[in-house]
Length: 164
Image 1 (cartoon, rainbow, N blue to C red):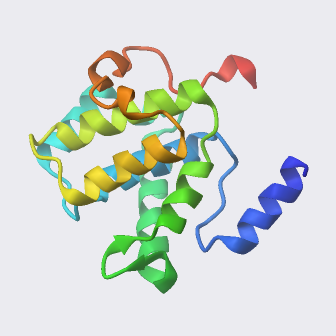
Image 2: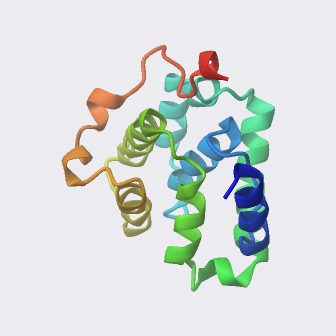
């Protein structure tokens, strides 16, 4: 099946707004999901994201970053099948995670997400569900859990623009 056919099929099947696979927007949506997974964005999480310059590493400016966060929140609030009683379904998590299939990008995003959710020194059930979904859907395995400190990006971008 061609990438165009797969994208069209995903668009029909998914109530989420479509983003190109491995795009900055798809990566930002995963980070945004981890950020809002506990229903609370702490000051420590925001401060760490600013310190890490996550939106720049992903390849977005601050306006684009905010648009992705707002879009995710809109998608989650306006579509009943996405979440039941405030919890994302396995199907929704699979849709979100399937937008990232580049292994290096998956590992980098997992590191960023783990660092952000631990910034407030508490990993909630919702945050844990998102991180475990990433491990499961990206086939990274439990050995990657706890490695986020080594994966924390320095100045390297999460998206390799030289391959485009």
